[in-house]
Image 1 (cartoon, rainbow, N blue to C red):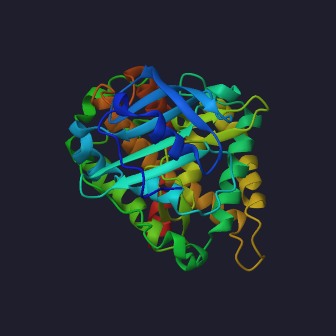
Image 2 (cartoon, helix red, strand yellow; image 1 turned 180 degrees about the horizontal axis):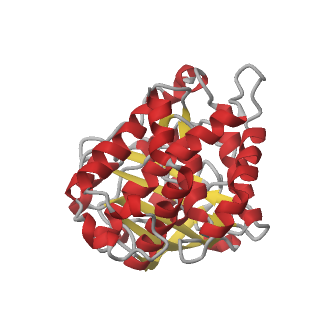
Image 3 (cartoon, rainbow, N blue to C red; image 1 turned 120 degrees about the vertical axis):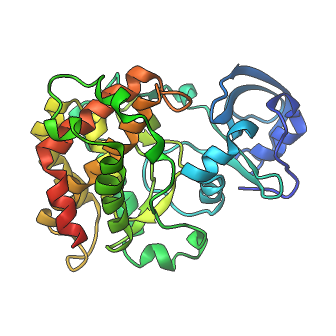
Length: 358
């Protein structure tokens, strides 16, 4: 999916018709792009744009979405996610058996510490990007859980280690930065339903006592290919109600529970999650498609799911405490922090983490 003839553009305004013709060639042979125009640009931690294309020969997409590193935020990405994980994943050729955007070209410039992805414009096929202010329905959550189950089952256990195309994949381990979050500013925005044990947390207790002990269990248990960041803001719903996952920049290997808990606990309202989470975990377990000797028991799935709240709680309290900032709007961050906070109390996350970490 990458081509030696293509280099990472310094700016999207410099993308030429010939460059885009080469980027699309593997998926649209015979298509010749005659004009490239910027329809929309939205820069944050990465540079993003929707480009409109015209053709002098053949056919191809009318619009594409492009993503590249922002020079001002490269160090932030290096610390929290990893610059090249997403382009490496989509240039590896590995199967991703769940709904995700089609990537036409994935380019890496290691010397400049830069990358560029050219992918489908999801809005062109009527996809509906979601965030925490528009939670999923139960049926939509079920679709997402089945997709994660298929993905995880495909690379379960030593399969993820034996896959040559994933030799670059790093383990999911604790990263630096959360300890600097001004936690009280987030806690004061949570509502009256927030468990007392969340409101009493200090930033040191949250990071060192809650988040890191859970994260360390991800590589001391069966591992798989993780999306790594499947919160609802990285999902979309297709016209036929399938849930897809985008922004694979945090792709890692580790225990399945990180993806499952992070997705489910933030994608549903608190009431829907409480009522349906056990049944949805069984949907996930069934979708793994594993031999009986490898299939985790329902009790193990429940235990690790309970512990996984630690990740969502830490990340979204930290995000909310910073006012949302580059990552998300404040109201989006607070809504997610609230859901993970309620799950933390409902599921007795400290006890579950202590059990799997022992």
